Image 1 (tube, rainbow, N blue to C red):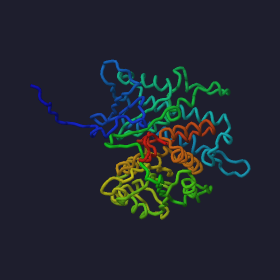
Image 2: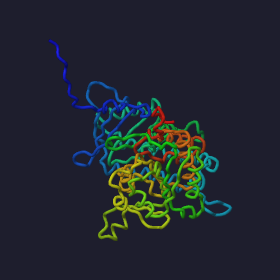
Image 3: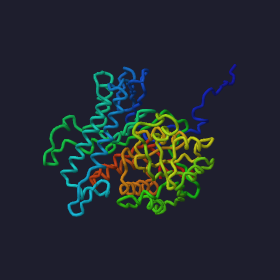
Image 4: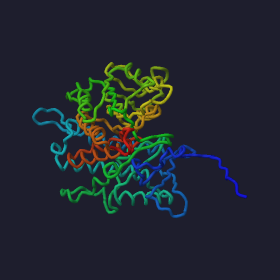
Length: 454
């Protein structure tokens, strides 16, 4: 006698088939590397997976980095200092006016104003510093690490990759790393007078050839789609200090921001916040509605970290902070106090364009950047070194034209801009922008049938 089979649902990860696995707008990664602290906290351990790493049946790929954690932090600081010196601080006296000319700061079209021999030396220096940090991270006597390095290098040289580098406490400017496209490239040999003999290549810079993001421990329920209202209007919050434009030499940057967003084909609603209390009221509201939260202001990150002083004066003197137009300091403790009961309702894209504040490997990132992400920000984009105002204005215009009008994904946009500025204008500053989580983030209208970027 046959009977009806009984069944009990013990687990339903698809939520009754409401969750689609692997939507097309979330691309597959070529390589995923996760860095965690060793038990003794002195070293980092790296785990690696993805198509770049062959399935040999010998188990997963895992190794300990050869350099101690504090030495790696020193190497990261050295890379950023070399970029700061070679690009931001590079200058010479104008023979007619006597004024110091800083070509990468004064204008974003550097290809015409910097002699080609000088520009080639700049790129060579940046390649050398990026390769030094790459070697510090991935080279050592351990056979397991050598295996990971060999297969990662092979993938990087084979063609464009999609890379996710995951860590909760190791913040590397991944786009500024350099891996020679050919094993025969010798970055240490003297540079000849013939550009065809250059040992460096733009394809060696990770942020130029590859789409790369920094990510963190898993965020349950993460969605790379920024859902727009039925009218398709994008809400933009500009958190700014207009006095930035008045610094010598006067350069319009903050003043141009509303026009940049309002001039895009896709309609936007722009709210300008120039005071601490305005930002506080917005972030603490349960109806926070920014799709894009933009910070154009000054910030101070300090040189020795924060929280090490004695008493309130010492703490305040070293804790990172930023200011808007009212000159009231905003600390990470303020953000924590303003945090709503739930996450920020709109899960915004956060874009940082602040002097020093964008240096995400410094004390600013573990404080402000991570706090905004913990509050529910979907992703964060910002520079690794000081951001010249003329370049910031042009980068902002190009970035958000691609994001709003062309419906691009953030990872593709940051890579495309790095390539455009380098090839068209000889300007390496496109490589300084890091993407923290969300390379596939894009705008999405719920009434569209497809979830793909439009």
